[in-house]
Length: 340
Image 1 (cartoon, helix red, strand yellow):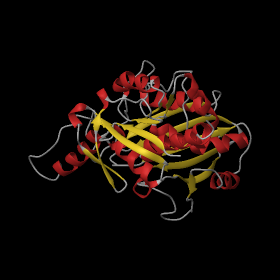
Image 2 (tube, helix red, strand yellow):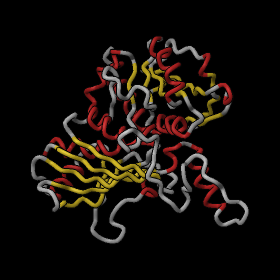
Image 3 (cartoon, helix red, strand yellow):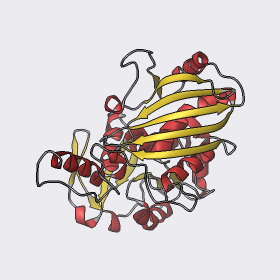
């Protein structure tokens, strides 16, 4: 049985990746429709060997469609997601709009697949923030073994996390620094991103943290365990694609680094590349286009009783967004639609 699938926001970075991944993973679809805003109407996008022309999201009828993958931002999602859900089409939403609502499941399939049943509440499932998605894939199997008390994470997030405008600004500023008179002022970011790092992603909150940092806290608790304490510092770095994270974990029980390495090697969605030699780890450049979350630099933290450090890298347009959404669609198809 093939499904009818709609991809909303098909001309954006994440929407295009959704189409790529649906084709790569040979998702059982009888029909795939690319949706975009009216200004992008008719734009051609690739779906495997097929070229699709975008249709108008505003006038699209979701009746008879099984799944809609949304990558259109919170404002548009607020208008169109209830419309699709009301037509009986499951919405898998990549925006932050529904992530923190208690009756909307927030899912990373390797971590909390059981939460899929919550779709019945409103026919909507939320996709987590890109920085959260890759981290919880690594945390969950370790938490199952030794119970995590606290996580301290510093992120190194690529410009693609800010959309096409972020990528363009890094590219244009980098070129401009070498061509006198063609310097490019910061507009998408608050300061120069080329050859720089910016400890500021999303808006500031009253306690001094940013919204991006708050998201990692709230989402980790919702996806993995509400008892885990999380503190985050999120930094934008001059990388086009691929988020990296330095993660410090404190456990209730002792967990040896060798056992942790073995656990992670056997866990779904993870590839461990951890050699204590030059180049024996993964960097963002190497993760681009890959499905896996890569774990390196696993080592004991001697400053706490039961602590580990690790390095976590993933393609943020894939596992951090499009891949996770498609995996949720696969989970829904396997557990719900096939059983219907």
